[in-house]
Length: 429
Ligand SMILES: [Zn+2]
Image (tube, rainbow, N blue to C red; front, side, top):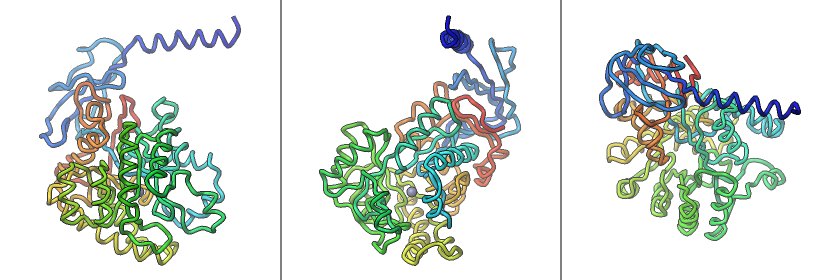
């Protein structure tokens, strides 16, 4: 037998042994919010086998009640809830004065390592699933797949590939024409048929979702406003091409004209929604589309525009205006019954501070329980993953976090997550 062959045989034996003994974990939860929206229950045991929840029972069950390789996690003085989900992150960067320099000096490989570091910060903050919206594709898809394979640690990633129009918010700006040419994405498109190609192209290379930008954006270094930029025919073609291949579309949108156009085209979520007025609210409620409010991004850019000196004036103007208008828009939409899914735009704000969004949502009129619903049940629904994540119930992935006291009484408890389990593996305790 060659060495290689012997190694393979040993590996096969090991994996057989490993898979034949189910690892059971009993989690003793002092308070358990198994299903956000319903009341928490005291003194519960969550039974986890491998990566799944198999049972939730009253009282603290003892190890002696179960067979096999068994471990007890004592959270009897903690408040336990499903892993949180952030529907709007950018794991491949973090806004700061060195962004331009980093892009020139760092290798793609080093950038990728940094993305893994940001992903881990996010997981340790209690966010077990994220939707990364509009990343540079292969690095993000590789990270998603490596995490799913268990090669590296990180949250479950749903990766949206970006499709945008020439000169629009998703296109490159603020560097020399030579560099612009070099960094222009192949998924920048113009006109319905070209944008159809763009949508198909991001799916071809591995996107789970398609991310578009129906309006201008704050961080674009051109005075091109924050109103509608993509045309109705482009939006329709992208949504149709994505739907034909089983993908949903998320649209960045600030002004109401762009929110309305994207909703009319059939997108599943509107990101930011900074100027959600009556026409948009009516469409949200008719379609059931989700608003992902990203109040933390608004707060962050408005503060940076005043304090930091790295923003050009064109960006500062938009940052202060949009940043300050976002919260009121969210409050209006929430009052009018619009579906919300939790999202921060982390990467604008520092990775790992994702729970600060929850504090802002409560400050702007949403109840603590409803905020937790947006970050669990609603996010799972938006992702079409309600059968596998979002609650602590039999059959779902064991994505479970714990905090010191009830976040239903004080949402700031979410800022300090003590315990994180994802897919049955403990990442923080
Ligand atoms: Zn974003």
